[in-house]
Length: 253
Image 1 (cartoon, rainbow, N blue to C red):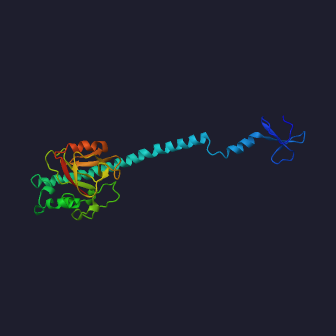
Image 2: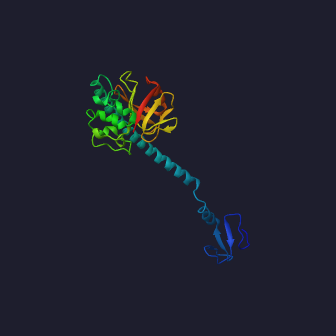
Image 3: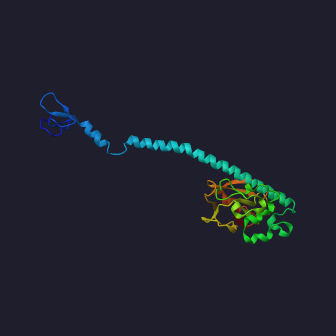
């Protein structure tokens, strides 16, 4: 032991003058011995997270993520199913309308015969969907459950753009119906830019995809034969390229 008062030793103790506070009084020599570990502990308390504490925080974050992600995915799956059911009902309504009008959709028929041909140039999807009022009596089918910015109309006869989540393809026909896009989620983007409301020309050479406004990396389409599909972003271009027409005009709400 170092016999010089007040000098730290390289061992487990340091020696300080007798009478120093917070020390342990020795029975001989009138000196005070203080454990060096106490000094080290005090320094450690000022150094922030220890490695073990940091690893514990990372572990807890990973556990929370594992618990929350399936819940979010499940919620999106539920809205996808409900959205698909909405578009199926719209597709059925169009098929029923066409069966009463020689196999033609509203956009192919004059308003004089209860169609919506003259409204195409306006770009308003609501004026197209109103033609279905006799076949789709529940206006909530026109609103995707994931679309929080749109509200259902009081009835299908008074549909407005703010009551719609879906675009309508006014160039759709009953030719090649299983591949012809009839309607779908409005959150389209072309060449990386969101499609604006109004009349939009969808061509087969565009790089088309979905924004993240409604569903997670996907959207829902209904085809002219009445079947609906969830289409992932990386599948959308292929679906569009299978259209009979190189250009399809969409009324986007």
